[in-house]
Image (tube, rainbow, N blue to C red; front, side):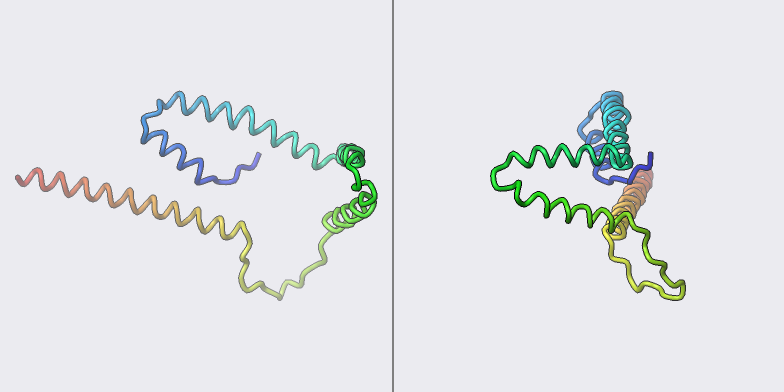
Length: 145
């Protein structure tokens, strides 16, 4: 399954290393969390989103549960009609875009997130180079004394 880069997870790994968490303890916790728990949750989510019969069943069950809330049952037909119109809107094919029109800037959440991740990676790289240079200079100073 496609995994989105998560700098917070990298930060958690760095912090575990800083505080002396043994590698195998961190690795086993990560393996259980990602390979067993996360993948099964993602699989169930994808199957339920892509299965129209299951989505209809979930919708009917939610409508049945919400109908027990006093005063809400009169609003349910309007709510379901709005939900169905939104569903049809997002399931419809997008209109074709002429190829000669180019977007100026794409300020989506994904582009902002990718910029943050790249800035964190560049900062990490600069700190590694800086620490290596300082260590080299310290060795050179110790040799000269």
